[in-house]
Length: 425
Image (cartoon, rainbow, N blue to C red; front, side, top):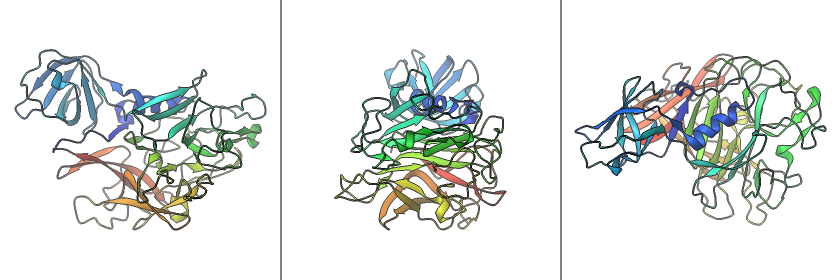
């Protein structure tokens, strides 16, 4: 079997910054989803007896075990492919396991390398550089358009104004079709979240001052306090860079991050396709994990609200959203999605701690009690590995995993969520 090179991950440990600035989230998504991170000059390259490729870089690579590397411009041509990082002997050296075996034994020409992206492209962007629409490269019909909007004012510039000193979040949603960056008002085009009576609902900014309401589906990366603390968006923001882990492929991705600077105090956001159990063209297998709220900027909130803590803490808080399933009338308001879990303290309760790893896929059902399918990549962690503030990788037999901390309850109860990356052969 070949080594899997589909599911990639990134972390603040790669030198990526998610700070207290507008634009930080979009810049992070551009690099991780679309471009990847280029290495400095490759000063040496060789192939060992096992067929692994060793490269030396001019300066520190900031790369992590099991990340995917893409090489190009090499001779022989067989080196121009994707690899898993098998070893990190030093800050400037990497050992790479190829996805396709390399027959040659020497490197004739050194090329370039990078940490590969998750495999998306930017379909649309605006002139002010505050909006993006991402979609999988070479998409299939079911792949949604993923719109991310950091706008602070309504289109007219006056009826809705969000103060730039307030909490920083993007309005995020999925659409089945788009022809331009602001193409979201057609009631015949399915969205997530979706109100068929008001298709633009997710993207509206109305009101001013602390009464402003900005968006419906919100990915928050900087606000006052931490997840378990109740603050309004109008409060001052906790300064500092955020620790994070972003994991996925061109089908689905997840971003695990805090709202403040308590590095362990993370929640998960996510978007894309799930593995559906219902085989028909009426059911778009989409999911979206967000803070779903129409609260204004003066409203206090914490993670113990509906949709506040996907996959952890309790049934109401752990939910996310998926399209409503109705063959006769598919364009209906979205449905809540409820994960099926042994408990809501993943990575903390140690339910299955006897083994070296205890990874459970996460199926879910919707508000109509219909079993919809399984989430891709992300899993419940049945083993307590202890507290961590940053991305951790491990291998169990040939299976590659990473995990990161997640707030699961109370003021200091930390667990973790785990991601399956594939097999290292």
